[in-house]
Image 1 (cartoon, rainbow, N blue to C red):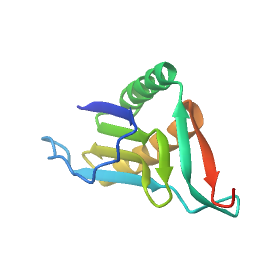
Image 2: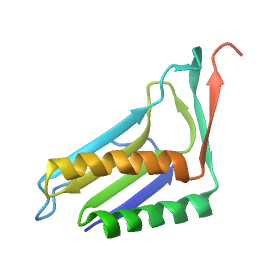
Image 3: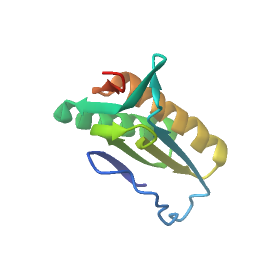
Image 4: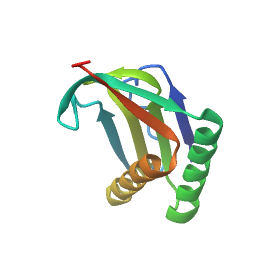
Length: 128
């Protein structure tokens, strides 16, 4: 079982790692910055995080997921700094034996990252 996360200013690469033995399904969520925020055009979003706490919470989140939801692998990457509109800002990849598990876990990880991990966003409005 592989447990990983990455908070980085680097772009999110479009790669698919080789499946491990026993993995039969992968669900990947790729979230991109929309060109509108609150109905106003934006050039992008500036993401910031309190890294020690964010990394600790991501590690705890993954530990909680694997403890409570059984064997799976997960990789979470969230961009930091300025991310232009239409560029990916978050990737969550979940692998497990079966597709239904992977879909459910991916949705759970996304909800938890958005509500618990101290990553903040500041939209950069195009009209300023």
